[in-house]
Amino acid sequence: MNTSPSKRVEELKLQLPPAPPPAGVYRPILVVDNFLYVSGQGTVNLDGSLMKGRAGDDLNADQAKLAARQVGLTMLSTIITHFGSLDKIKRVVKVLGMVNCTPDFGKHPYVINGFSELMADVFGEENGIGVRSAVGMMLPENIPVEIEAMFELHQD
Image 1 (cartoon, rainbow, N blue to C red):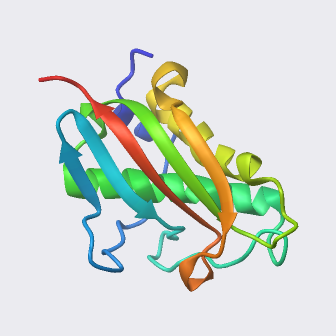
Image 2: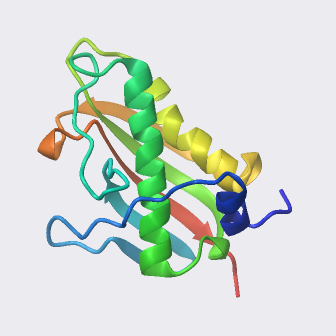
């Protein structure tokens, strides 16, 4: 892909929510060596409020997948706000996707595809898809999805 990630955000007409403030004692991002680590991000709406819901209960798999995409938009906003530019990122390395769901819900990978597909759109197929885990659990504030990720940075 020859287009920069920031240009892709414009081309795709993505609307990014505000970057959320930390909800505890942690850093939203941390750069170590040539890697950018992003703390778990939740489902922030454009107005700054949190999406709520649980897959298998009041959300179906498609609604939860849209929530995972919204987490991706939130993460892009957090990176821009606290790191400065998406264009310094070379590739997605690792994603941990957590789905707030009922015990019988089993479509965690499908849900987290909402995030992964967005990263592929922004960073390209080759660099936007990394290794990944998708698990179900109880999440704070009844948010439907939380995702943390690690990115490799371009060498200066």
